[in-house]
Image 1 (tube, helix red, strand yellow):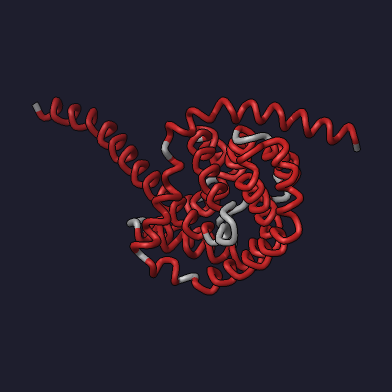
Image 2: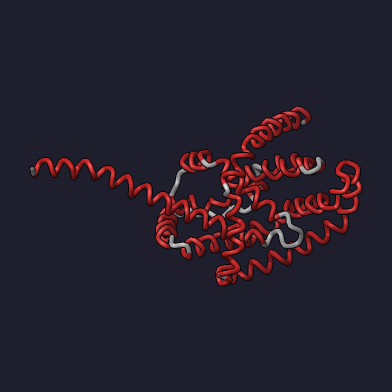
Length: 284
């Protein structure tokens, strides 16, 4: 058991160093703006969120209860520890730590019961609103034919595979500022691609194609995942931001899809050009 934990700790350290090197690229990528744009888009188009209002209200209710219980029992003890190691930043960091713990518990109650289906519905609605109705239609047709289904994975860092790493990285929050930033980057890197699970399914990408797609954009997904995690940690309403994060993820997917079409059209024009030249020469 000790050897296993030591092995996991060593692997965590190696991954943390790797993620730290991505921090600059992640910041420059500007994909951390998409969750903010998701909030703005949701405010301008409230009908998008109202389409899943039942799940939205459930998320708010369960968030209030779980955060309230955790804050009552754990905030003061954690604050006492953080005062020693973090000084004046202790109240804020303790609040973030309670938010991280609340998110951990919420992943067990909300995600499998009602959150993921609602977010997938929201993702599709946003894609349609951003001019990608054909992508949604084709993807659903493909899924129906293959009996395949995929949902938005809003808390991928807390999935079965990432849960141990999430728990092991929680103590990073005890390190003032830098530790919390590293914690967010690390789990953002792990969880970022989960927000596009639905997009990959609609496009019909294989597991290998998905991995290659994400790897080419790792810094971008790290930035996006970090920003979404930061919103999810906001006390009481953190889980509600999963909805606006999903809107932002769908808006980003719509842009990626539009860019892909531009590139494909350019390639088709390039391929046709030699044929046209050849036909002109034959005519002459």
